[in-house]
Image (cartoon, helix red, strand yellow):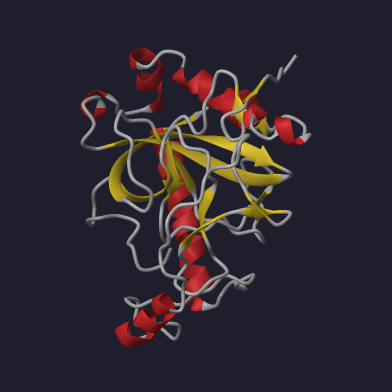
Length: 258
């Protein structure tokens, strides 16, 4: 969240993305803002590890899903374009390239545009981006290029976000801007705004809302030495053999927006 820079280099339009969920997988993994050094953890709901449902024909996440570090959607700030406050997380990214990236990877992406999901009354930006090494990256430069080269993909993205909570008995999610994406320039302005919100969070100009601000690289009041960071990591349980997935993870759910 804090130690990985938003951009790998100054002055370019390439962004770092932390991969939380590889494409086609179901485990809902997130940057944990409440724990020191913000590790990746699986979301827990009602005491159980959370997996997203397979809403036919979508299996798991249909992109590599993750976040841009050093950004924060301020839950105390009302966005002028959506009229809703932020969701208190780093800005989300849907990486649409062909490679399935490993959980925890930090990859470089080109931003193409963004959707504005309104999730339970909060603004939850979903940036559309592509791995700069992807074969299509050279020809994808803005959101309208996606429809040209990947017809149907943006519509599938909207549908996925609308229906993925419906198997849990929740209503369909909604989008601002009549379900339409905004272009690259708009998306990059949103990212800049969320980066500014993160800087205010780190400086103390904005209340932290429980976000752990510990870091090893920023040389501020929340910075800790490498040895102390090693101790934080050492306190976590050792990596164990993976447990079997729940029996219903691969179940198809049939939902309708009509």
